[in-house]
Length: 163
Image (cartoon, rainbow, N blue to C red):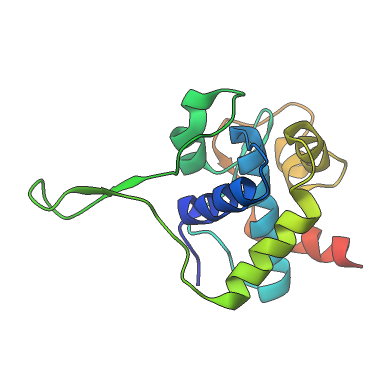
């Protein structure tokens, strides 16, 4: 089952607060990307319900970019939100949350344990190495912003990292 990317980000926001660490938009992007990649590799299904795109500075989840871009390089200070409802009468602003399942929380906590102590730049550098899905998609000359990074490519890459 794929989850709302903002719900995954909100979980990492909670974990960062619990560990008294700040989290910038770029670090959030990379954490959710690494979680998605490892989930694809381990569970053989996507963690998030949207495509990861190749942008100039690395893999980007568009909804997270839109949500957190106003922070620039600064610390995120509020949860990601989204409007829900089928009409203006039922429209409301909600904070997406992951389901209360221990397996998912354990998985995301492991991602934090491995990657949470790294800076945004360090995480970005990991996504830019040779043979990464972003590098293969972006190439030397770049691609149009918004080009999807193939999920099979992400899965294969993260599986190769497990060996």
